Length: 484
Ligand SMILES: Cc1cc2nc3c(=O)[nH]c(=O)nc-3n(C[C@H](O)[C@H](O)[C@H](O)COP(=O)(O)OP(=O)(O)OC[C@H]3O[C@@H](n4cnc5c(N)ncnc54)[C@H](O)[C@@H]3O)c2cc1C
Image (cartoon, rainbow, N blue to C red; front, side, top):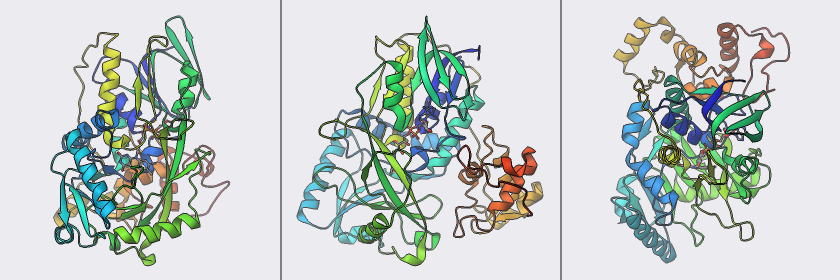
């Protein structure tokens, strides 16, 4: 490719997409390279979806600064980008004296970080806030919330694209070379040229650092498994319920409502070598039930829909395996390269503050000219299920495809599927439709609608049946002709 970009961002997770959006406020040629076929295929689509308050991170650390800043601005961001979000508050519950000591410690840490409104509450108040929560007492964080992490990442990417950034999927970066003042970034598809490179490659951020000539980082992959409960359990829970952190500081299994009405039970934590090991396992499943029941009284097998796993990309001290702060740096010896390493939790909450700091590092070296056409607003797909009866009628009148239900469990209409198929990022996978609409996320997990959606993708995009991909390159839905 002969085009020379101003900024080339490696990784289309929430952080890379937020960075692309921030750069698109200026007159720059921006490209995002992503190895998968869509944004949010790795950690950004495999997490609890909690907007964290920022009370467990070391005062003054980048994690503390970015989470508090990201939390405070999220109502405005959610409104601009049409992202499902609720400021539910959160309770961190305890049972023992040492739990109380832990809560008092993190309340003090939170106050030092500038987290507003933290209070220790007794059982009576805990029951008023969330009758389904376990615990004898709790710390209440009123500013915590829940958001849809798929839609947030997609919205950031779509808004960046609408403002001029380009996204290239199925492009795994395999090598980086600096030739004069230009970086040549080799992918599995071609070679891209750019004046600046940003590494936001999540679990592969240490590998990309090495390609840039920055050695010495180690990423530990801490896998966490979850169980998803259906909406019949979701009606009992008001807010995320977390256990008091143990002596090492991390949270164990919690219960979290999703913005769509489900409940997540998890994650646990296990150090894994394989960064693509998203298997769900029986031992974890059994432990999640035991630990989850301490947080949420309705962890019952009849509510289980499915499991999933995510892997936290923690930057660790190689010897002690202790987790370290986020890295965001621009080094003199690797000019025009911005490196983000170890963006583990709370990376969703922190994405925009990290993105602004990335642009600030660029600005230290170059003058930025405003993109006067920048529009911060992006509209999502209008959900039929969330409308009143009157709203539903109006939608059907405007577009009769709103009158045809494709996904029965989640009441997703043909109109929504069609809008998702013709998404502005050009994503054509079945999971791409799932993440944009919630079709196939209900009780039957696509048993009824998956083939119908495949057929719609095929017809709308003029593909053969063997060309419709489930999620990853090579995961064809069909290997030959099928009768639907
Ligand atoms: C179990 C769990 C729970 C969490 N809960 C929360 C929470 O509740 N709230 C919160 O704020 N945060 C949470 N997090 C953290 C949050 O999910 C991450 O910090 C965030 O998603 C990181 O985003 P990212 O863009 O840096 O990484 P990613 O989403 O992993 O994006 C990196 C992208 O780079 C791509 N890539 C990698 N290598 C290459 C290459 N060579 N070439 C091209 N592309 C490449 C990947 O495919 C990927 O899409 C949680 C994480 C986990 C695992």
